[in-house]
Image 1 (tube, rainbow, N blue to C red):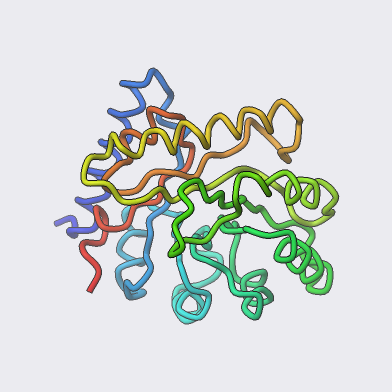
Image 2 (cartoon, rainbow, N blue to C red):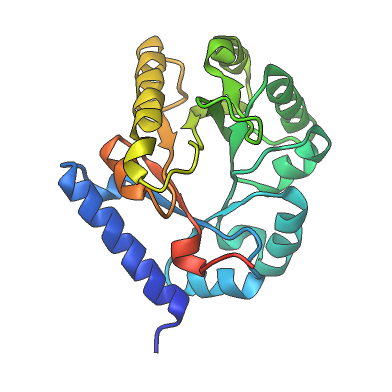
Length: 232
């Protein structure tokens, strides 16, 4: 019998496929990142058994324990939460992708640590603050270009895209303008040729608004509750 997590993954994949087809997109363009923050290693292992191989964690310390138990090479590990400067070295050691670069200072630090740790490359996305919420991280759109210029000069950091966390709305449609704005910023940066490869990733969309995000061009969706259930 499939576990609840396996069944949930099937349902989420169906939602992604239907949303992509509705938007006349290829579902294969969209990476599902299972947000495993606050969930035990056993839950992650169930998801791996159900062919999920990308996981999002919010806190370096929690991820460190979990990844040590599961195995660094058993999945792709994404840091999606705010990265404190004093956790940057461990983040470089643990994660395949960091979604939450939000200042030139953090970019400089990650670049230096990559060199010190002999890590040839680290994929990063810039978290953009489009709502001005004091409870959320991200760089203001007005300051984004300075960070982009720093990333263009980095030898180890590979700037692959943008991430946004819009305010929570009861109606997912209300999040659409934030997704549209991030896509417009991505499109402008793409024209400048700043991304390390491809069109530039758009990390946006969670359990309650993934369909709207996919309609607006999301290439990475970060899904927790619909896979692992409510957080305790």
